[in-house]
Length: 354
Image 1 (cartoon, rainbow, N blue to C red):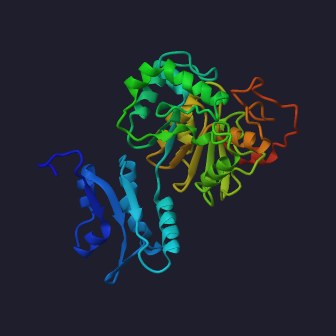
Image 2 (cartoon, rainbow, N blue to C red; image 1 turned 30 degrees about the vertical axis):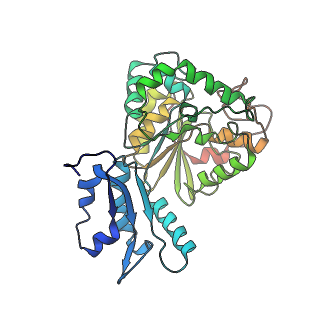
Image 3 (cartoon, one colour; image 1 turned 90 degrees about the vertical axis):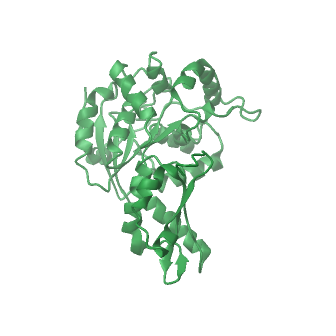
């Protein structure tokens, strides 16, 4: 590979055949810069089959450092014998359990801070915050998500009246020079609008599917939500109902970046099997990145509000009772519906307010 040195020549790392040849699995780490495809199949006698739970620890040990390294190629498993559907489902389940990849989403607020413009009205900008965001944007150890509008024209004749998509088309033009400077055109980014499946698409069926899929990420897991004082992620709806447990670490509603050290210190006290959901504006990026080497951490700000809009059929958004909505004309509506804080307050394990 080194001698030929061609960008279109890569390695398929085949774990089944490595086992057949009794090769050292540690070779993967050495070969990883040249690997484009990892193929997993389990050896049973002279046969091969989909990976079983019996070797879960082995696959976890193998794949976790691969994912954390920023590997961008494919990982596939084999459903070779017996019930193919069962094999495929078990393979997907195994990969989901192994997946330690964390998510950070960049939106207009973060890009404005990087551009040294006025950021969101709830976060004071600073050179330190800008530098931290740039570092994360260039990181390969975490899934960095940017708006889909950066790669395709999101407006079509069918959705041309969608105010959210019209905003993004305008914003991409406004910050075009910045994007050319700070983004890598050869890199595969996630879609930051994963937390906005309803207002961006206005497709009820698609939104239903996305919300259902996202909820599987924390099904039967211990969840800690790191959020602003009035965010109340998952309160009053069933978004977190599938979690085994829910705890909360509360930060300030404004200028949360200034409390990141305290929030991180508390977060690191949690058990290793914890999944963190962070909804805290630009500060969420720093928290998700810093926790990603120890925990699966998902920066999912807006998801809960988006889910509320979906449940209430509010396609143009707006205020949601008893929750802070930065984009609404009335940011916090505490009067239109009663609020029983007992369950929410029982989940709070720490508060760090300004």
